[in-house]
Image 1 (tube, rainbow, N blue to C red):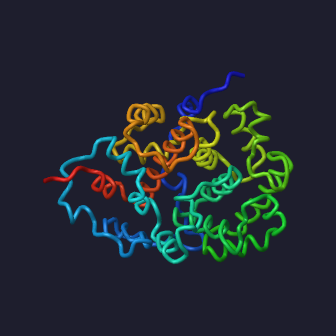
Image 2 (image 1 turned 180 degrees about the vertical axis):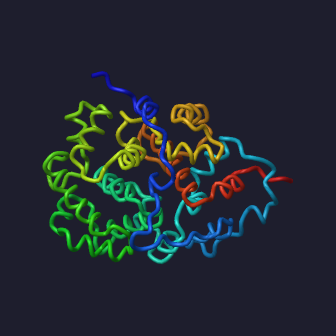
Image 3 (image 1 turned 90 degrees about the horizontal axis):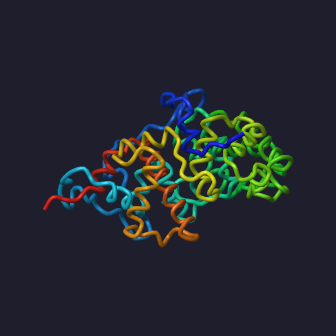
Length: 323
């Protein structure tokens, strides 16, 4: 059959459901979602601990924004370290302050394809943004570090459930079961060994064709439906060029709230147009890979900002200042 591009596939799918079914949704089955900090500039400017106390908000220090920032200003701000705390839950900011900048987080770290698949399973559960990201931090950092199929299989169900207990998240038993099944599926169907985290077997067997890859993942990974596959695709396109450019409905909504192009293709064209104006030294790879990684960071920051309710804060921070 003729394969669709990611953009064509997204267009053919039904419109996104309401917030409760979107990535990193909310539920109150077990542990209630943490209260959201007020959307003020000072509350989102706390986490820079390397250089001393957090700086005062630029809004108070430099006057009110003159007007809505243009797209280039928004992109430059989203690519800057200053935007990171606006897309993080409060407890992640505090965790980084306590445990150091080397802490692996969904908001700021680069993960292997296998780790991205774990994240997609967790974040597609009906739990809050904060609980999903806390679960990921707990599983991927010391003392657990469940980051390969072998480590998960060696640990087994009970230690993984206990790690999720430590994260104080919801659906702990079901999530632990799904992660053990996921590790088995990677060894048996999706990878080349217990230590393989690349998932290159999926790409080879599907001819580097995303619609086929998507179906293969869906058929072998329990608990991975449309939402989880969209989350995985949004992130993995930095490493799998066959997906680029891809943006799911949830993320497109976040881009639109910021005033950025709200289709994947329009955002890609905007990046190409302003590429020489962007500081991309921190992104690895050749120019094509850098473009994909920049694209993914913009998507991730946009959806995080939306989930944390900080779109107004980001627009204010990115806007030019009145003299």
